[in-house]
Image (cartoon, rainbow, N blue to C red; front, side):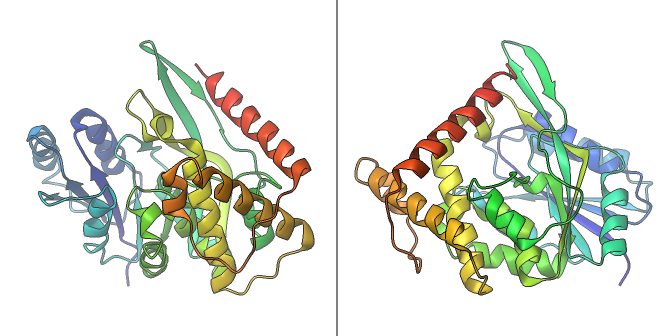
Length: 321
């Protein structure tokens, strides 16, 4: 099989932003064929018209292709992602959020690293672009982590707030298509989270770290994440998102029989206690609760430490503005 790539861009009512995303795909310095699949559930034809214009501009390019799919029966945000993945028939593939975009050497660099390290996934650091009152401020190299193949323990600790957090956005990752499909369909089983696009992205990014096919990460920022006023990152309840990542982590630990230490176990029990407590006051936390082989247990010291960490993360993000 050749080294062709498919990039799936699900979109909804963001014609200008998705145009930027598509152009960043077309302008990659990768010589192999790239198929850009745009799945659109917009309520108007603006995206359709703009995609058509780009399509006409690249007709003479043998190594670029755009497929446009109009989804008029979407019930949840995840639907466009499912439809797009069904179009993937290449060796490599990825999802790209419609408000994000890629640097020109994103694909060539990461596929080269995947081949050198013999991994099923490669992930770059990201630059976050935040819009506030008409001004755009950029935080470069948003995450801090070591370049290389990620040990499973690092992923576990990162998403238990015991170590450095790793990029979860699918914009940052590219994968072997067979592994992307395998991990994506496994993620869908926690539908309460995935139908709203919570948790599945973390799971597919680090699936290879758990099944031993490997996930490579680089501190080099080759992807750009938009944090405008309509960004999901800014408009979701952050704790819901983080708890969906947490349940995705527990599902990976269980599926691949990963051994955890006493510190990790205490943290898992404490987070479960927090979710159980919050579910008494907010049904959304009850809806995302997933049966796991651990019992909730209160740890006041852990609760205090987690509150301080969350406050730090929120403060850091707001300082971009």
